[in-house]
Image (cartoon, rainbow, N blue to C red):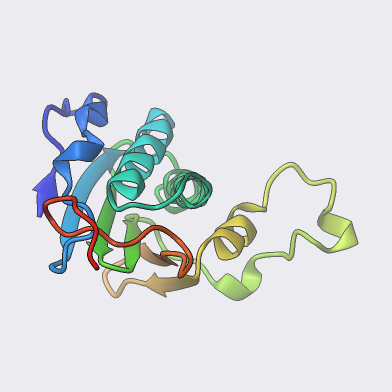
Length: 179
């Protein structure tokens, strides 16, 4: 597992994660785990980390954008709706990079929620609302999306993005293409 080096206790400073520090599409999964503070500044940090991990995993620019936006929306929800901006609570962000996919988890310390209570942003009554599109975007951008209420409290979001079958040839740990 790779941790984020150089992060200050307030969650800022982890931007030093370099894409080159992750092996490209290794046969063995690579894990990255980050603990984020419940601060809105953590949203930008989470998005940046997601972009770098996705780049290191070999995702193209369009998929990196989708992955980053899904992480951004998930972390916003975790901070605002899950942890309710309580600075005593944390958000766990995790990535598992596998040869053909990335698995991302976001875990908050809130009270959980019922997915059936989320209004459909495509309904006419919701079209002009300024909020409520995060989960819709995540479902649109990612190949899999799952929400679990944790037994001891909190919500765990799991998202999966698979590499495109027409994309670049996977690389070995040394970075060379497999034939």
